[in-house]
Length: 417
Image (cartoon, rainbow, N blue to C red; front, side, top):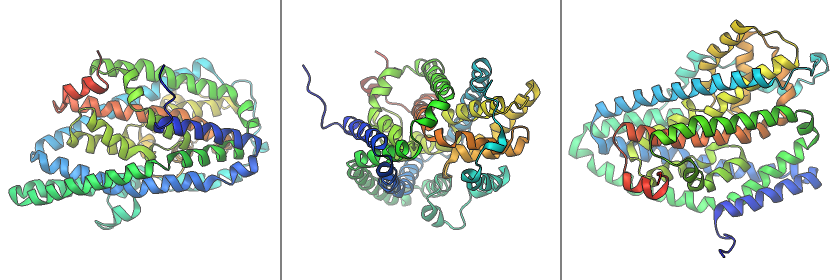
């Protein structure tokens, strides 16, 4: 009989998460005060994201020495991202109309305390498509690293990688140096992962202690429905994609178990971004593909966030008795196709994008988002899981499409047998 995997990271994080739930439930004030533990761990990982992306992307592009392949990869990635996220938006819209979790709630907007969501609404009003695109360009080359914006770092990394590739043999010393520097950064990530149980404990204790179980009971149907939709999307859509590229979804979940548990505890996919890059390379995906697809996917391939946005938006309309006909919902879908691509690099990203979407359509009262503030982090458990698995699969899909995958490594890790 196999012993309990006490030394495995996923198990340690799971135990810490359960301990956080218990503490938050029985000592809510103490649990809420432990928020800095979770925030500190997330900050430590975010500190490493920019250098890891830069080294990986530059080394991958410079090693390829073929700019046509880089452009082709970018185009194919965007096509794949758009197709899958549209599927997520449509499935979320259909599911919430069939289930109708908000019907009968008859919420009176005058009874809602909207003060807690004012900062999110203010941030949402500052968002625009043009502003979002211009924001990809950093003020200076180095400010991208100072700000820690994933898309800005990816942008300057692609430029630098293409420049090194264009240098030919003169750029080889830079490529070799970045390979060694990248190894050092990944070693730091491994060190920081030892702190993940502490971060998970603090994050979960805060969530339960701050919002408690009363909120969960009052909006339990929405939570149940959303998790069911996430499960269906994962099994049906992502499962189908996995089969098409000869990947076992179950083996992928086992392979990424450490990252899944960490994401569940911290409700942040950023905490595992460097590890996802490393693990997908270990699964046989080419460094060039992983280095571009995974960071880009964190902004453009947010399947779980798309499910969240459609489900919650229509739920709020149902709960406040706001009429939404077919054309209203199609208009909502069109707006979400744009706003969902901005759900990264912003604190409370999905919540901010939800506010921006409601503000853009003007159909659903924006004040109604106060209803779900208390359960947002619980819903984030589902959306971050789907985002994580969706981006892992995206790396395999694009690597397969590019013919840049090691089938032997794939079979040994997540391939179908």
